[in-house]
Image (cartoon, rainbow, N blue to C red; front, side, top):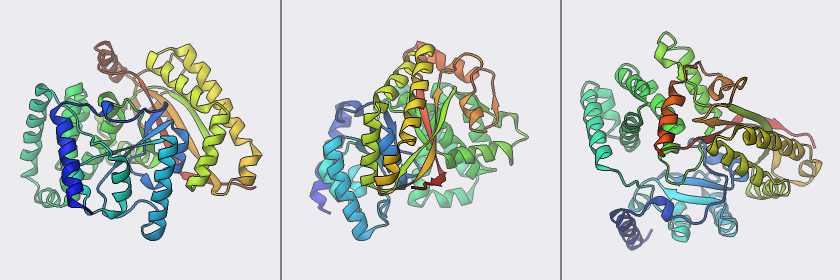
Length: 390
């Protein structure tokens, strides 16, 4: 790709950082409900696009396309996606690295040149910068005792994970989640695979939405939850600390259509609009932020009815090509628990939890300081894909 383009792009991003222009000031108008694409399943975006008002889509500098398997199919799919985004504003692309890191990725050139996605840089306070430096020194010291880990972080993927883990560890300390941070350090040398998975799951679920300038809800695949479940129930089950703190309340689990193409996604979006799903979902999300239990329960019931009505709509099954199956979607609150007898979100997902209220108390303190607000999380079970008989 054109190197001059990337030099100018880098300069633009550096200037925004120097002028402390936050990411929330550099994106277009976002339509609620706003959510993030599932981190480990970019290849299964259509159901996520349909279920969101705006989907925040981080672009990683992967060497191969996650669209269409590469080649002509990938090029055509990206071209169609660009036109769809221009018409609907359903996706907000952002970069995870500086623009120059993408120079060799020709499959992303159309998206980069059309939208100039901003970089997910954060303006950090001096206190946090100092804390992160301390955490980095601590982790780098441990690294010296593991030759295998030292070799791994010399690779591009290892280096990226290492930098990401350092930041996640610092944020956990910064927000007061010291038990989770301690667990990460305790297993850093003895079980690095567990340690890395554990801290990234904790960061993505508990921390990122708190510090995210776009205030978007996190989304996860059932694979992420299964890994957390496996770790807590098997290898480390003897360690009391490895049960998870309950983080909120389970709201609902529904089966909905699974579009396998952009055209099928458009059809499902039309059905969601006709049934007022986005308005009701936004109202539910606002009620969670406001911690208004009566409205939460009211809008949750309305969401259940809407999704039931859409599921029973035979016209989708009959006419929508590319909708041959369905998946389960689970929604819950994080940072706020409904009154008894509500079921905890992590308990509903099958994780071992301790219901001591410690996490909720920590979150309530962050809320009182206006650092955080409760939010919703969505879990997509891509493994439970059901074929539809038309």
